[in-house]
Image (cartoon, rainbow, N blue to C red; front, side):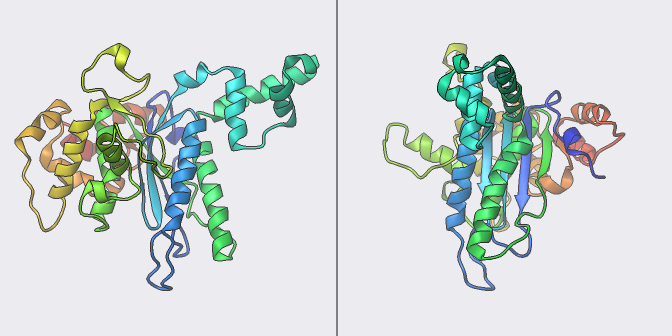
Length: 335
């Protein structure tokens, strides 16, 4: 059953969402088109740069991403608290890096309050309040990203019309277990599609970016523009040493989990849970057998929300549903 976008994204329930956009008309976002022989690998960098720009301006963190041949995945975290602490000047500056904005706001940024009348200042305040709200809006984040890619790709293809099959699909991630499951699913997309054999070889994914950053912490080699990622918890936990926002797991634990899962879902390798990976699965109460079954089909086993059974039921109640797809799977996966 279709659910209105305003109900699919409810920040009072969770700040985490899995978003996906897919192409239409056999269009290729990037990669190689076997019908024409044309290659579109360069569009991956277009999208990576656009997501990076959006992430630098919106109050929305990128937890994971994967850019595939005809679609891409994002796991996003909306940071309402950080946005509320931004000054009016910062809000206006951020929004005007994305869009042209209202002329009075641009004038105010250059000349300040002294050059504005009281009614003009009221108009500026009204628009800044709107910009502040839009900086935490996932729909605006996806719109900013997709419109640009659509226009640029259509221009390159010398055609008109829809490039994306819909605005975007979204799934609410209702707890930390759902977040970790979905991040691993996104990071393993190239491996499941037989485009790479290891996470570090999975181009244009967050797992590759994280591993490169992890390996080159002390290196200063210039890298292509990539989305800035929400960091993991530090190895030695101390509140004063943590980022204001972070993913509540160790990066090393996550790398091991993704690597183990990637080997387990390959058809030519049965995979065995290594002894050192057990603690993280035990710690988040995930069934290892059901994990493998779910990680390959997460978009189909769940619909609009992913999480523990009780949280999924509360989410259903909050948007007026009696039931949603995935509750039975959640009951088995998240023990």
